[in-house]
Amino acid sequence: MEGRRGRDIKPFFVMEILEKAFELERAGRTVVHLEVGEPDFNTPDVIREAAVRALQDGHTHYTHSMGRIELREAIAEWHFQHYGTDIDPETIMVSPGSSSAMTVLFAALLNPGDEVLITDPGYACYGAFIRAFGGTPVAIKVHEEDQFQYPLEQTEDYIRRNREKIKAIIVNSPSNPTGVVTPAESLKELIECAGSDVLVVSDEIYHGLVYGTEAHSIREYSNNAVVINGFSKLFAMTGWRLGYAILPHELVRPSRTIQQNLVVSAPDFTQAAAITALRDASREVEAMRVEYDRRRKYTLARLRDMGLEIKAEPAGAFYIFFNVRNFTDSVYEFVFEILEDAGVALTPGIDFGSNGEGYLRLSYTNSMDNLKEGLNRLDRFFRARTAIK
Image (cartoon, rainbow, N blue to C red; front, side, top):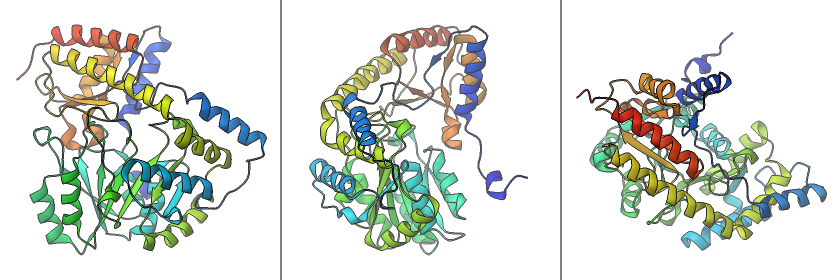
């Protein structure tokens, strides 16, 4: 029997692409994977060694439901070093992944019918998190001509007319899927727009992975805001499942109660390793960031050589969101055509909302050799196609 909430959640098209790619590979085809947003680097040795020591030292038990205080203090210290913010460790909730932290947040925050503003295109899971607790995601269309930023006048107008229903607005910078970074002034404008009764939830999971610019934390500008972050992207720790939320004081107690019931606590030894990640892995993290930037520059140049226009150049994360409207009216069908004909797996833009139609997301989390091969294949594919518009 299918639950009602399950019917409200759409499938990930990227997983359908991945599954089809696996089928082709089992049949003997080679596929260049540029679809999944996961670092191709292994977790740095210094972090893995810390986890082994933690296991040997017996860190295999429950911890405080909000996380080990030593880790929460290290997160507050890291935040101060990078943003100059004064974060109370008691307001930090450590969870098994940033998705878990966001799930707990919306369980604590939302009542049925409450609205949360998100961007379209934007990270696909936000709507699922919101709907799971009876909330309503309200998609605000963003456009490449405006660097995929919230349109201030439209957003202000919607909040003014519906303020009694709106609980939060989500900002994701650097962004999945576009890779754009929200400027400081735009963050300040969102804070002013939200006012005191609409919570700004800032998904900062890609912070640290920025190139030629600076990513600002929302907590630089307001304490009436939530930071969602974690260790998956910056530290190449996707399989470790460790994230956190920095909460306003009034949300600490309800979030803690829900975490106790739904999660209990994050794994003990991974928390010990995360302390080392924050304090001792900066050299390894910088090496990964530099390599991502090298791939980013190369990929942008190659795509532009193919005649593909990229008006919103990505300056963060590890994605390029590029416009293929001249070649197709259905990117969902187009990605399967590319996969079958060229052997390259990409993500269709409609995975991220209806306004993503006409775009493809490329994730450059693959070796430079594989990236070159994939782009060579795409070059041949696009040069063999005639624009339809």
